Structures are given as C-alpha cells and as structure tokens.
Amino acid sequence: MNYQAVKAIYLHEMDRMWRTLFQSLVSPLISTSLYFVVFGSAIGSRIKEVDGIEYGSFIVPGMIMLTLLTQSISNASFGIYFPKFTGTIYELLAAPISSFEIIIGFVGAAASKSLIIGCVIIATAGLFVDLKIEHPIMMLFFLLLTAITFSLFGFIIGYWADNFEKLQLIPILVITPLVFLGGSFYSINMLPDFWQKISLFNPVLYLVSGFRWSFYEIADVSIFTSIFTLLFILFSCIIFISISFSKGYKIKN
Image (cartoon, rainbow, N blue to C red):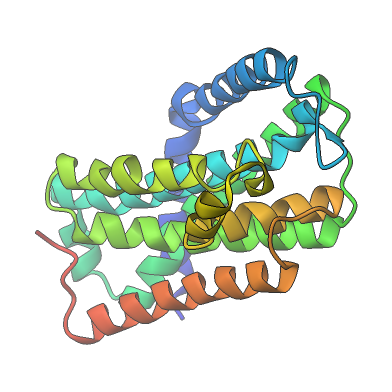
C-alpha cells in the first residue's frame, strides 16, 4: 500500500473543500435551514406529529440522509471527473499507484466531506428542534456506511461520465426523486396501500427508515432489512468497481 500517494490524493481533495467553503459547507447549511422553514414550520403547523414524534424532529433524519446522499455522490463524482476533464488524470496514471489506492484517496475524501456536513447539519438541527438520538452507535454506523457507499457510487458516476450532462444525469433524475419518495419527510404509513407497496421497491426508503430508527426507535421497515440493504448496495458498488478495473484501467476519456 502506497500510503503517501493515498494521503496526497486525500489531502488534495480535502483542500479543495476548504478552498470552496461556501459551496461545500455553507450552501448545504442554508438549504437545511430552508427545509426547516418550509417543511418544519409551514407543513409542521398542519401535521403536528408523526408516529408520536413532533413533525419538525421527525424530518431531521430524512434531511440529513438527503444531504448525505447528494453530497457524497457529488463530491466523489466531481472529484474523479475533473482530473479527467483537465487532463491531470495522466499524472495519476503515470505514478506508481494502483487503482485501489486511487479509489481509497478519492472516495475517502468524498466520504469525509459528507460526514463533516452531516455532523454540522445534526448540530444545526438541534438549534431548531428538540433532537434526541436513542442509538448513537447505530446512527454513526448508518452515517459512516452511507457516506462511503454513495461516495463509491459517485465515483462510479464520475468514472463513467464523459461530459457534464452525464455527470448530473443520475443525481438529478434518479437520486433526488428517490430520496423525496423514500419517506424523508413523511412515513409511508401515511400513504394509500398501493403506494406503500410501491415505496418498498425504493432502496432509499430502507436507508432513511434505518437512520430514523437510530434517532427515535421508529421505522417503516425492519432495522435488519435496512442494514442488509445498505450493505448490499455497498458491496454491489465494490464489486462493480473491482470488475471494471480488472478489465483495464478505463478512468481516462
């Protein structure tokens, strides 16, 4: 393992976050505050409680998961795409570093950024609502694995994309709708029976449900099903990347 190379990639990506602090950190915080204003205040004035939890508190895990998924994918996909776009990827290709070490550097940095944002949002949410975490270890488990899993997924998108349109295609057309339809701001028990059954095909539902269980011990699906789904997505991404690189390093345009 070339630890120095992994460290160099990791620190370079983290440095990019601090150089674009407003876009990386302040922007998600502003979005979260607006979600609280719109959903917590406007809708919360009509929906007082969901499953015995005040609505403003109920939506916190969903908002964190929404930000975590979008930020993880965005950070990882842009992180690997821009070296391809600018041509600096050839410096990595020429360096004595394996594809596995490149993935660790880029994915590790993307996951770290998402975790920082996630922790800041949790702290911010505490300013708006009465927040309690019943199972802090499980909360950290979901937070960490979700950040790593969707950073890997974002790396795959950046690895696959050959233009900016493809880079934004899956996050905008697939991930965002799945998050909003995955029980982030409501319980699927509030839906008609038909739509409850349709929602069970949404993998994001299991992530949001498991993460919400770590806060309030309430969930739309079994916590074990949520853990299995998260691990399944994680290993699927690992297997996909492994197979791709085993057939040749195709990270350049």
